Length: 336
Image (cartoon, rainbow, N blue to C red; front, top):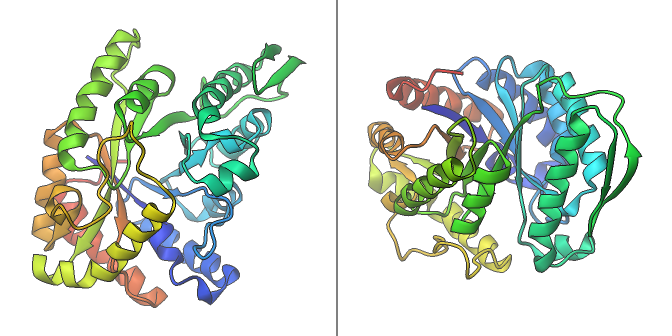
């Protein structure tokens, strides 16, 4: 089981200023690179006020020297917001900067504010994403490309360089529905289930992915990862007390952004289900047990979103050390 972590919680509280937050991030990533984490991932949102969402692509370039052998992951690029040609060249450039340590998570997005700003609607998301992936893959071959779709037009275009990784960086797709899981199996190398999906639904969607991968005729089984909220305390009662405020803010954000859609599995946006049903939660031993349960249902990796972080940089570094020593090491999660 490979385990990485998501940077989003470390951006809070955002009042410290962007420069300080980014400088702190570099210290955290440098520390994490020595502690057994397999990757660090960065989100992508436009117009995220009051939350802080710095753009992931320049940040990945900046953190590459500090990150050791960790993989650097977009989790996830909202691809329908972006120009496919510019994205293909930016990602190929990043792949060289990182010497092939780039993983590219993509998804269709759901926030109306950013979709409107990009001139697309919810109905445009899937076809534009599929067009974008096709064009990017073709450009990454280094061959001349002519493509005329609904959203993208390229006439005899050719990139002057190809990615470090061949044929291209690892691609995975965020999914919270059967349709998105099948799409991930068909056009990318892996699937990444969101943090609000229950363990039971993760298990069911894992089966959907494996079956769709076989049906699509791929020669490899693909990779399955789930994002999980990590909530640690001396026991479950203390973990719950530590995380309650942060969990409620998360619920409020996702509800405000209309994250739940009819096609999706039921997302955990309130307290109707216990934390055991959708998080990694409790004492370090409880957390190890949850990780092992994830392995038993077929996961190849888990991406932690770490709740109830201490506020100072020094304390956060201590927290990463605690997670490494008391959770990653007992879970056997030291493979990269």
